[in-house]
Amino acid sequence: MTARRMGALRIGPVLVALALMVGVVAGLSAPAEARTASVAKLRVGWGVNGPVYAVAVKGNTLYVGGSFSAAIGRNGTKLARHNLAAFSLSTGRPLRGWVANTDGAVHALVVARGAVWVGGKFESVNGTARERVAKLSTRSGAVRTGFQLDVNNTVRALAVTKTGVYAGGDFTAAGSITSSHLVAARVDTGAVLTRFTARANRTVWALAARPNGRTLYVGGAFTKLDGKRRVALGALNAATGAVRGVVFRQSSGPVLSIDLSGNGRRVAAAVGGRPRAAAGNSIAAWNTATGVRAWRVRLSGDGQAVDIFGNTVYGGFHGGFHANHKLKLIAINLRTGTVRRAFQPRFNDFWGVRAIAVNRRGVAVGGEFTKVDKVKARRVAVFRGRW
Image 1 (spheres, rainbow, N blue to C red):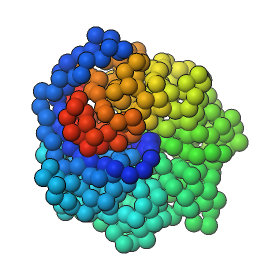
Image 2 (tube, rainbow, N blue to C red):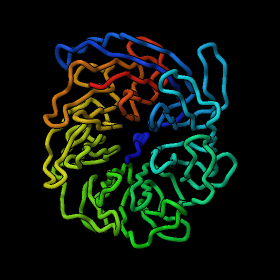
Image 3 (cartoon, rainbow, N blue to C red):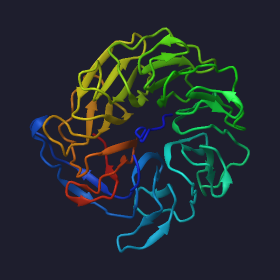
């Protein structure tokens, strides 16, 4: 399971919203000449009043994290929600029974093992002290009080497997234990797993692992993992943190978001940094066994979010794609790296798409935009179907 930065990945400041249900049916003659995707079905629902850095979907529920203070209805009605909210995918309405207010921004969300896992800058959830990591009820948002993992700075990524819960970010300690940008803990209590010894020399922005996998993939701004040279992307033994032998070639940082294919054979990454760097400003994919880069799609700004569903990689970014600065979201063939022409909606904000989550019901994205294809969207959009 993977957490996106915010925003992942990607992780900026203040204004979020919810709610579009969009069916996209039209195409693109060429990447540089994208036509606005025609909207077959559109349902504008509630939104929120600040940027979105993380989204997660489970069944018919969309969880949204960021930096906001309220959900807002179409008629201006406000519902207090601080940095976390849950919505119905089918109606776009907030789930009023799900409340998980934090006192700081949320940058990472994962739904796994019957819980919502949250990471960010906060120090409390619903008034309960939780230092930047929390485990919440999927039904009510209540804090699972049996779990506590406190770290000393921002959490930007989370992953959950049968081995444990993993956090990455700006922190250097978990409780009294030195943990340079990476830590693993028990899923039931949050006790640090001291057997996991991996450390990064700079911020970890992204984590990904299969639920039953033995390998944890790490993305960020680092150049070393456990003292071994790994530039921005690396693979670790999920149990011990030992660095795997695979070296991902032509990688560069920062890697702001990563995801694994269903079979674990490819890892896709949203990459920021200098455009002329080995992988800068792109969405790219690597073979997990050999480390060979399979393809790279160049962007006009930082790659900020990535999610894989089936044979499609969804990539979110700021800046633009080719000459079109309204494109902030594309769908890419996982095997070939070909950009799918049928799905390239336009967004109105420079910072674009910061978070992506996909399931069988559709593609959910979050960021700082307020319109998609000239329709008011308010920083979260859900596209029905997949491409």
